[in-house]
Image (cartoon, rainbow, N blue to C red; front, side, top):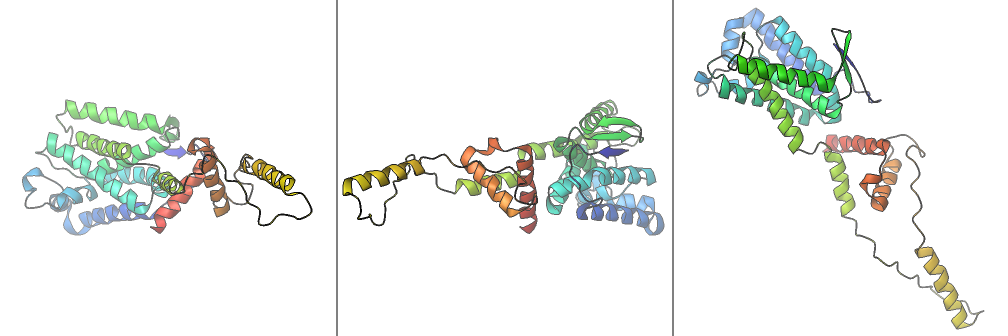
Length: 304
């Protein structure tokens, strides 16, 4: 399965948080095969409700141990496919918190609906990442088996329906698969994405703009420092006031189009966009200008 991008965003092939998550999962599986043994590893790190008080850490560790090679390979491939672009749009810290939150959502649904079985695997967390990708870039296409094109939003919808139906039919688990835990990961991701501001950077810029005091309704009159002595007093005062009124009531100059003063990420272009927002409002921005705001907000978040 591969995907094509709907815009010209070019994220790294492997971002920092995704790289660490894949490395931890692979390392745990290697120890499971060589040193600890599959059964011992699953009992030590997998979650069972009867051991909640004595092995509380399994609430987190269950998502790093897998039942077999294909279980691990599918989860890590999905994380590799959809995770880097989401992390690139957010930040490593925010992406990691979201990943863990979706994993906890899977644990919570498993605890509610299938509490007597063993819970292992990163599927709930990975499906949450896939949901975040679909909500931000719904029209990107994935190629199932490298052949069949399918939009990401429909892929996630199909996965949600299949897991929900299979989970209900199997009482939360069917054939050793924690279907409702998968649904829990999707539900936790959906709640997070709907309740939090996905455009935090734009909101931060909007707050900075709102701190600038509004211009008065009537423009102030310019007061000359000194009056020329060659004209009569009444005529020269009227002349100066007329020129001042015409200058102050002149409409603000239009903001030059984005890209006219250099590269996309240049601070001069950001100043132009902020000027445009203060003059015409956030709704007047073009798609390219909104993309510039998102990129600059990502830079600010990484600096924070």
